[in-house]
Amino acid sequence: MKIKRAWCSGGGGRGNGPSSTFCSWHGVTCGGGGRGNGRVVSLNVTGLRGGELASSIRELSELRVLSIPENIFFGEIPVSLMNLSGNAFSGSIPDGFIFSKNMKIVDLSDNQFSGSIPVNDSVGCDSLRHLKLSHNFLTGEIPPQFGKCRNLRTLLVDGNILEGKMPLEIGLAVELRVLDVSQNSLTGRIPKLLGNCLKLSVLVLTDLFDDRGGSDAGSLLEDKFRGEFNAFVGDIPHAVLSLSSLKILSAPRANLGGRLPVEWTDSSCSLRILNLAENDVTGVVPASLGMCRNLTFLDLSSNNLEGYLVLDQLRVSCMNNR
Picture 1 (cartoon, rainbow, N blue to C red):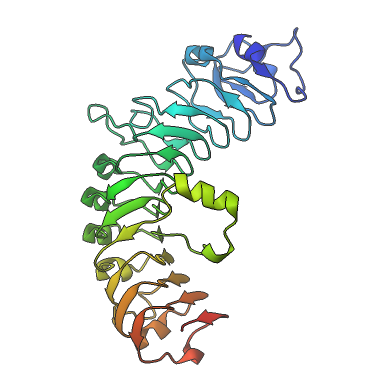
Picture 2 (tube, rainbow, N blue to C red):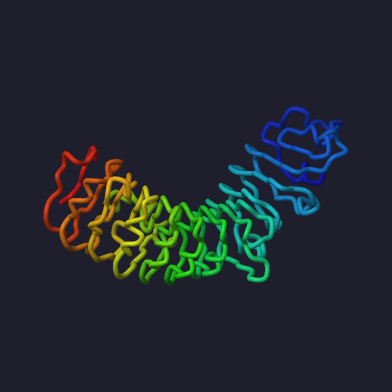
């Protein structure tokens, strides 16, 4: 009841009357039969007008799933929650929240969290599978401890103010499928160890379809406070470019050089989107790019490439290759 009083219902829900048992409330799932004698194991609440996130949630000792996206909650958050995306939470992410024995999915995207990404070496992150921290105001560096998250599949830290280099250890997270570090202020080289992530299918280093020419005053103000300008150095490692699982590679305006690999084959290239525009890629356009038969978007414009592509080998509907 403490939780219910703390939240302003946006229209209520069936069975949420004062005489009903909490296990019958809309969005509440109980274990042990679900007839009032069980404990709350899941809360799924959307469409509320706001209120403070009740500290009494800490008392739900059996809570395994809490999904409260697209509300207007405020205040400090307990350390055992999962999906808090699309709210207006601020302050630091609590210690022990991401690195937890049982946490599998953490989605804190689209909030106003600040400070560094907290880690806890003594606990580890073996259970963590999906971590989404996109579009906050997080600072500091990407923790190298993510390399110890051996089951991590999704890591989204885009749209923050992160600095420094991508940690070499990120290549130790061999289950990684999706990595997005765009819209930050990262520097340094792309770790060659990323080539060890044999299941990596999406790698976003800078925004895919960002049109700076169309920025208005509001977006320019946002860019001032968010990173937006990753400035890597060196090449994209061939071990990464040649990953047979890689479907999306977005790295326009990333200050990258080097040459494109020449060893793509029909069986080794799964690329659907390749955007390396406005870099310093040199050499010839490899004929083997024509073996990437699933390619639907290709932008190699504003580089120092030579040669030509046999266009009828590609299925790209619209190419921009100046």
